Amino acid sequence: MANAARIFIQIVKRDLRVASRQRSDLLNPLIFLLIVVSLFPLGVGPGPDILARIAPGVIWVSALLSAMLGLERMFRDDFRDGALEQMMLLPVSLEVSVLAKIAVHWVMTAVPILFIAPLLALLLNLPTTAWGVLWVTLLLGTPVISAAGAIGVALTVSLNKGGALLSLLLLPLLIPLLIFATAAVEAAVSGLSATGPLALMGAFLVITITLAPFAVKAGLRVSVN
Amino acid sequence: MATATPETSVSSILLAATALSSIRGERTLFADLSMTVRAGEVWQIEGPNGAGKSSLLRILTGLLPAQAGTVHFQGESITQCRDEYHQSLLFIGHKSGVKPELTAIENLEFYAAVQGQPLVEPPYELLANVGLVGLEDIPAQGLSAGQQRRIALARLWLTQAPLWILDEPFTALDVAGIALLEARFAEHVGQGGAIILTSHQPVNAEKFPLQRIALRYQH
Image (cartoon, rainbow over all chains, first blue to last red; front, side):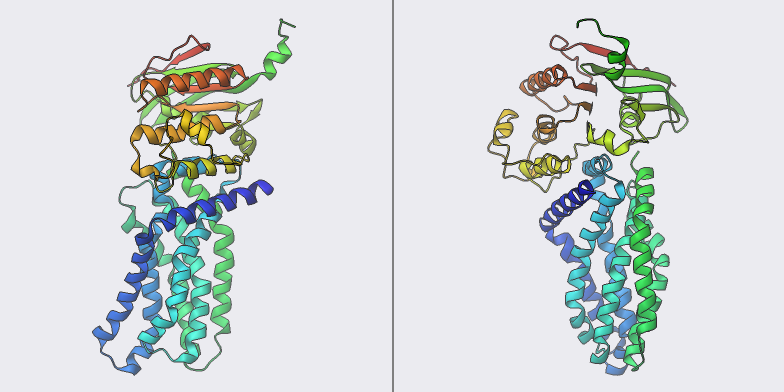
């Protein structure tokens, strides 16, 4: 157990260090998200009513797409330089290392989104009463993207052009997440309780975080050989 | 004292592979391969490109499943005692496992810490020994192939694992590097460790006993 905790911390430490030296890789998806969201007022017209109506969907779809951009990084570099092989030979269950990778990915990609979420809401004229719920949907939903994404990356990491395939694999799987996230924000906009959809998102979160490491492990075993 | 009883010779067996077969695609790389690696032995796996040397090493580490056969570490199947086995194993493969964004010291610190022997202070002496002194603050991507290889191989001086499995350890090393590595091999074997390696270069067998397995390219 002490072994697992130590290795978890070491992997988190190393990966944060590596990520801090590849800042453009981290900034690009975030800038992409900002640009896509700011294109909508230009595309559909600046009418505040229309924007407020489509805001939950636009923010969530853009967040999903921008997540696809950076997802591949999770195991691709490690696969190329051999660190993935070494990770599989650590004296600890592979699930622990996988969980560390997912945690780092979430911190580096989703936490910035949580910070700029109010800006996105402002750009699309989302009523301020729904800002809190939007933020909670992102808080609950982004770890699901990281964890489910890790399964897709594990399966496609050894393919040369896995990027497009990865989106094709993952986006359909994330549809339920999108539906309940936008339902929660729309409920908040119309003054209804968002507890139901948020509770379901919490359930998604628990299920993916607990089960994804096992699926990722199986995927990596297939990819690395 | 000098005569080893059968019992002690059994307990000194580190790794035993029994009737291994590997099939990649349509081609059988090797079939019914058995080897027994005892403490104090160096095994060199020889063969032309594509004969299955790397596959054999990866099967021995547990990274690749064999189509048939078993690998036992100290009498226990490596699928059963995976964590203990990996604690006692150092594998350096074709890809070095060195993160190009990190410096030599950061890379070595990580591997020392995950193996449970964290470095108390930066290993300057070791870096000097392996010819990386003065380069410790440069991310590995700024170094040459041989220097990156030296970072990976520096792990051999930090580890306490008894079994080393090394895929082409001499690649990209200069003559001095090779001599250094052979001296370290001799030291490790003298302390009761064992090494399995592949190499296209002839290994200097004066300093330690060398066993050879030859794989043939099978069509």
